[in-house]
Image (cartoon, rainbow, N blue to C red):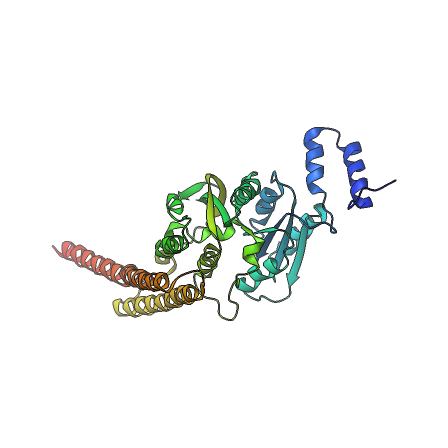
Length: 355
């Protein structure tokens, strides 16, 4: 049989098998999606770092494999999971040739794992994928269309929401659409000044051009700090625009954590004050490293003028001070006032008993 240029014998065999065993259109489309050839570079690379993701990774993989754009590779880097994640990933990799699975025998940290899947990517476009999230079938196609329609863009993302353990929507993030701007200084300012709880870390899971990912530094592995994902997005925004699709195509899962009040026994007032103070100053120390990251990045952006850098640094300091004050209020003052109120109610209750 004569082969066409750049077509392997395996491609022809796959096509014949598809035509014979999947004559109906839906099944045939599914089979065509499964076909993957190691000698062809995929258009899109998806990197999934995972550690002990057994509970939700099956749902995450199912939603990625159901994408309408099927020309992608999916690289899973297992960071020494101990909960059965390996067996699940190996089963999926055996069933779909687009999946590559690798495992580290010791946990090297989340930052290393994110960098690992990025370094293994071969596609023209790249995206990270968490092992507990869910994507609508048109997600990759929509992100790809955005980047192709905007060649100067570095990152494509969409409206998204948070879902709980059962897949129910618990929160949306309309403020995400305050971030984009064609002007470099303005979009960096928009991003740096937006509050962290408004979801600005989540574009890390958008689709990015490999042109951009080849030039940015990735995650710092020597010392993992809080907010690294936001610093990576900040780097990407320095390389091009952020393009947002209006539809909710991405669902970020949040696991509900039990409250501290149900976990901890009652403590004496002095001990509560000491622990709250230590906790707040630990958080502020982390946030200082986070804002220091912004400072270093701003100075490294050659496309900014000296005046623009100076303005951004002033605004960074203002934003940091506001965040520190809020951490002190929420982490220290609010618990103290709550404890005072509890003690007051206790005294009132005791007095009533003696009346």
